Length: 479
Image 1 (cartoon, helix red, strand yellow):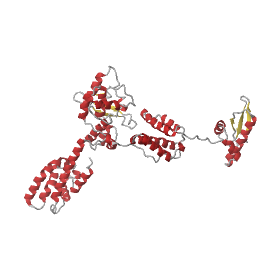
Image 2: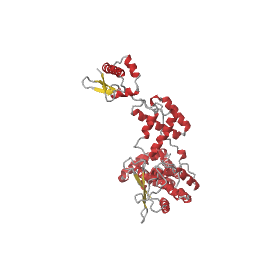
Image 3: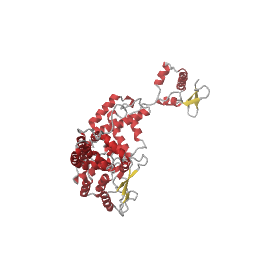
Image 4: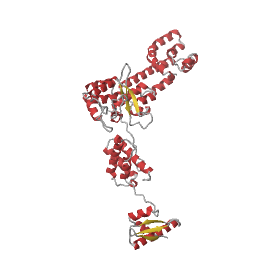
């Protein structure tokens, strides 16, 4: 049973009670009026009975509904009432993300953008639980009208991230954006490939040495931009000049991937054009200056002024990031299937390179078309040699290949020039028709063999028969 006790020092009443019937607890009221204190004490008794029975009476329910915030807070602190969680609003989730300490400043700027969108559309005091899937879809439509497709999808992805966090914290039962589709949009229509020669000629026309160095870093070292340039210095740990016939290199510190072990930085060979641009910029720098680009900070956007400089030099560039894409395309072509080497030189995965960086430029197109035409010629020659014959001593083309490999175990898979030449050119002579027919077909097929043989030797594991050649041509028609 609860009772009241006057605290003489303050002139206010204390409510004394027991939750377990043994230990006594108490809490101070904010009143010195005995009748009001006694009234509170009576309802505390009702609360204790409610804790035992689990059924509050109507009088207690009305009293609880009319509680002042101060008294309710005192009752909650005294464990007489369960703490009531205030509904969380748009402002609460925005504040949570803005106060994160585990993200980079550039990421916080991105949070600011979606925060302004959410506040503009819903209002900062809008309760998260009140937003349903229909309102989320309307918000996405609003973004689509306001921005381009790529920006709208990135913003909706951030909104999903905000509400997924709210769901984890128990602020909402389910994220209202769970059915909205976000993600990156790969717009390859704006991708451009710039050859090293074109950029080298353009650099010579750019008057600003700082801009020349930045363009060269992006095209010949694959620098991501300000996020990697702002912390570059002239120290030997960053730039090691070429000397004594040994090629120098440059170290790029990557904030974007530093959370991944072993990807905090990458060393890039110093291209002659890049080294010339850096030396020119170094000669212009004041003595004792350590920072390479003192005007840059982490969230700078050098794309605007670099685009102007390149257009002044005659390069009609849509996105400055195409310089890095051009570099990554060259690295992918040079490394081939060596994913580890590609990742060391670019700072991202091979799969990421295939999706976001590989540019199918004119030189690669011509090379691919040449290879494909060569294989089609092989196909035609093989089909012509197979047409109408009964086989090579009763064997098929594939059987002949297997027999040749059995005879030369060290050259499995038709992996020598002589073996492939005999396989392709010798089909006509192995059939009935005499030496004259064989000699004529060999002479007709000789140019074809010489054209495709070097590539065939390197890819002998797929040149088993005509069907395999067809299969290869179909699978690689999109090179």
